[in-house]
Image (cartoon, rainbow, N blue to C red; front, top):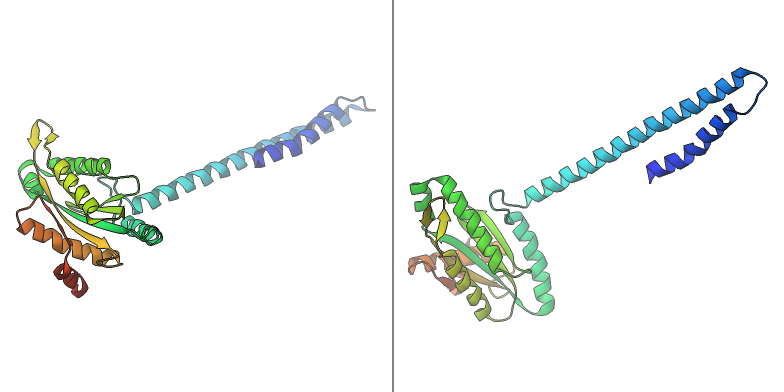
Length: 245
């Protein structure tokens, strides 16, 4: 709009000066004078257009850079999943929606079984490839209102919204275990892992994300102790631990 306004403002002036220059006058000085004026106005307009274009380009680049930085601050660099900061924001928004709908939120805390052995035997590049594939599979499982986040290492969280019964959370957890336990084609190798899941529901087990994560983490390690590749719900003993933490 600034560029168009500038053109509309100066074009009549340049045109009038140019036409006036070619209108018969008593002497040649008048024609040269008006031509010079027209040239100066046109040159100033051109410089102004360049300045406006430069300022616009700079503003756009600055906006894109700020957007990218904001995105990086809320995204896991390896998997492009939400990170802990972003998970907290999603949780707060989902809690408001759950209260309005009189539903629950299920926090699934995931820890990969056997992942350390892949890193030790095949190296970190293979481990990173597995983590990326885990992220892809998790995103394919959840619904559009659910959130998948990576907390770090081989720990992931699935935030399941609009849960009416525990069986819905259990169904998703079983599907996660089934999909994550399928083989991973990494290079010329087929690698296998499994996953253990701890589940805490809000508002039953708490209203704060950190408390729910601690509760789900306690249930997760009970699942590992019970044989891995299984899901357990947070119970009263886990809730007590989360309060103590």
